[in-house]
Image (cartoon, rainbow, N blue to C red; front, side, top):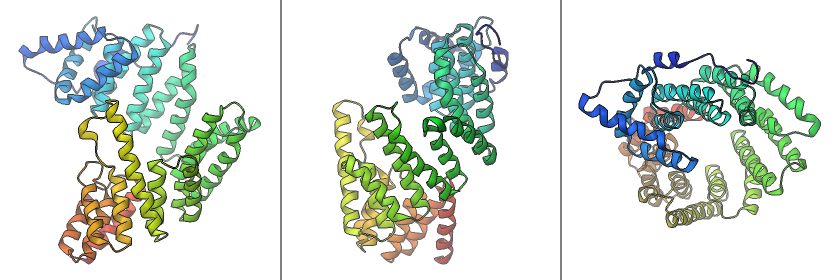
Length: 418
């Protein structure tokens, strides 16, 4: 690469080869669908673009009909979709989990951005690809596309994004299971920023150590971040506060993983002094106390406050028309916390009410909530219902380590009660 120009190891031909997601639609529908796609060329400005993406995502069946037509248009000698249209469609396909379609569209958008020599467009398209691969656990592809982006030179916008891409690269190497390699990469960055009492890449090291289940080391690293962050004179006071709050919250989670509940509570109590009405902080402190049979009455008050404050926040969003009526629901995690603290106080019928409410939503279909519900059913001598709840929990188990551990525990309960 010379003269500030950029190049990729893929081109439009490679994009066309990926279009295995194309499907045939009735010929009479195609002119209308094609016209809809061409109209996306006229969408300009960040707010209209975001609005168009939301509109497409809101109508998944109709949007999915557009994707194969877009595939056919990419095969034309002079593909008629411009960068904005390709990016809008790529983002919409991404959010609709149409991975192959999204990849092809993002790649085509990247090609357009390169031809236009637009750093902003290159960053948008590559950023979309990186997020797409990472979100779908395609870590080999994430590493490759991150390296390609880091090789691009000559654009201020691109250069500003490189530190974030470097972080994502190292995280993806860790996700590949190459933890030692990832730690070596991040240690170089930590060493380079030590002269300035740096803390940014220490956070990344903490994440990798936690990923590797090296929790004591992770805790020490996050403790270092808490010490160094307030000394960073380059940050405005409000910025420093936000970063410090985030670090304390993460550290509280590491302490919970280490079963150091008093230390975890200390971090959350410090956060509540600064933001006493924050629903997350209230819920988390209440839950960890309840889960460890500590300060149950106080824990219940905290959790009820979390639910109350969350409702107030939703009311404000509704006033601003930023929340749809069907989204106005209590957080299932908070309902679970309330059910669990009531269970711990042997208030079983009331606990059951909140846990049944929690599992009504898609977000509430979680093994931990079903496990809690099963325990409540057993306390009420409802063995069949308990086993049914536990079985649903097993079916809802996600890929995380903690969920797999809980699944094993729940399966033992099922076996013992059948």
